Length: 427
Ligand code: PMP
Image (cartoon, rainbow, N blue to C red):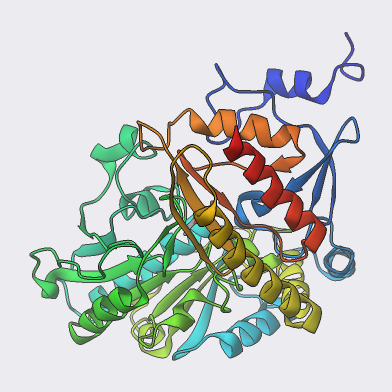
């Protein structure tokens, strides 16, 4: 059979290695030929509501004409340029814009390509900050159990140990973990027995631990630990890669907590999910520690596509859309509907236990009963299959089922997502 006559899935099967995929047992991937608002469209014209915003990146819907237009215009002007020794308008304008949005004393924007690199940059900044200051004893990192910060070695090291990291555990640097209780538990927690003077930084996903199972924890617990860190000179790194840009109802999840981080990592929704881009923002105190006539104090980090102008233009377009009253109304509607659906789930007798139903902003999650409470749970495949039949794309994290739709989802589309979940639970 010629390549032209084979289906996309058949050709994919011969040449592609997909992320997070066991190719021996995987279901055939959906051959997506088009994105249209909240929908993904396959080869046969079937439409699926992207209820997880394509790995939490998409906030305005797919193939948004305004974002597409801005990328097109930028592509005709300047598609890319080395960012060491050169600068350009979209990067500077985006930096100015983001600094205007962040609460706290942020003064500098460092660009990279994705969530993992944003985290790598943040950790490296914090470690070298102390080195540059001559504080050589600060060699440890404090992180949260159940954390997920990415798949590169540094970001894996600061993530909770589990099936994602298992093959690499011997190669990851040591991290001190603290466990913060979930929302339905008492907010009290115990700090590990550590000498704070040895800790370089504390990294955390504020309020919602995404890949760890949409685990939601108390803002008061975060406030407590941040206050402790600030007192002890520990750099606080907020990983807002998932929570940023209104996912939790506020612009940033850090806005729920009075104590502000020193470093903040952004990606995913930054470009509205259209192009890869990440930001690591830091305070002037951190930036200043790298200023020296001695070149050894330089932050030796950079990527070929740092501050790609197309991605910066996409981010500026996405932020413009985000600020429009329509988008703000859509977010408020989604937040409210999620709250109501939480109550519906809690009230309904499905003949099976639906555990820990919760929502924060545009994120809604709960656990399905399962003997194995872990990522490799079979619940995932079965659920995906059943909801796809209904035209809704979900991707549970183990036995945790969640939704995180693009903000442009209409009342009818959202109702369809809820009805699909309702039907799934009634089986
Ligand atoms: N941090 C958090 C909180 C994330 O949710 C993710 C991705 N799920 C990452 C970092 C890594 O981002 P990326 O996949 O873009 O490397």
